[in-house]
Image (cartoon, rainbow, N blue to C red; front, side):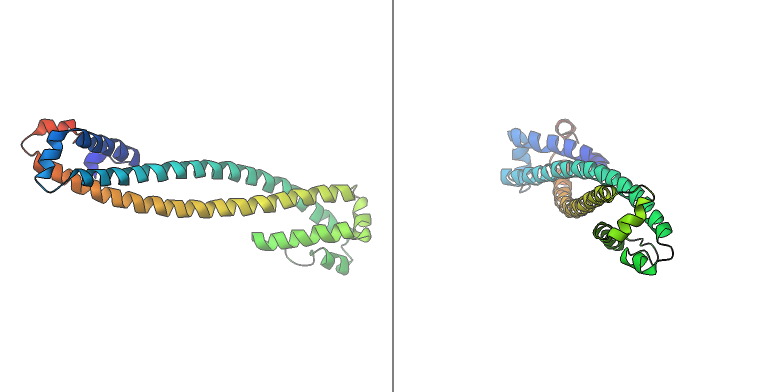
Length: 214
């Protein structure tokens, strides 16, 4: 509704003025009462507006958390992939002619692109490398120790953990967005109807409409 602003913030600001001034002014309540609008109707509108404010604040807080978690997730992903890619390349060199070891490390096929497959491939690589003396011995020529592999494995597990958290928060944000849209739609319908009532009630009193911000 153009007269109430083109953004949600403007809608809330102008609607708050309209509702608060209507509730506090007996002359306004008297005029809209002639058209069947009661104080209970106004309170209902205020409840709808408050519910919009509440969900917007909640979504803002969740959005901030998600942004922070996403930043942490991206950093963990970069650290993990940097080390993992190096270890995979060196393992392919170390066991180029050893198909059984490459198979053990899940390196005898194409590198996985989607996250679930990558997680499975990396999990198998780390666990197999850490439990095989032959693999550890083969990697030692590149000065990669068991401690190095274990440290990299811990970074991988941190990345997996953050991925689960980010995925969950993104799901929550989708739910909150839908809830926000539903509540906003209900309030917008109410305030549009109420502005029409006010314009009719005060069609000969521009000063009253101006006081309401219309």
